[in-house]
Length: 58
Image (cartoon, rainbow, N blue to C red; front, side, top):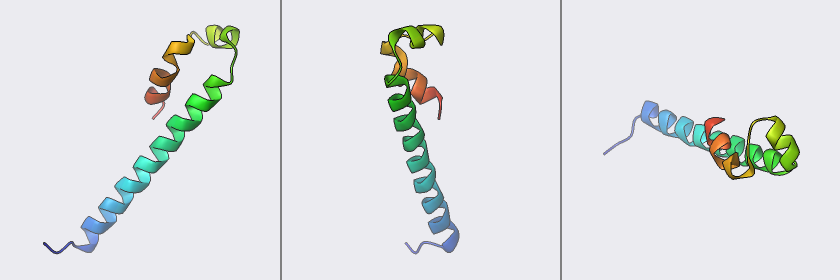
């Protein structure tokens, strides 16, 4: 099957979007992970919820 320029562009954009989403997730987990339990509590988050909150950020 021969890919058209549109299909290649769409695939490239999907890869870029996935990479950006991964970066947002990773940065959010890191940022929240640096907070103290007290700071997380002030935000209404417990440490066990950090990954879930990060997934919602993307």
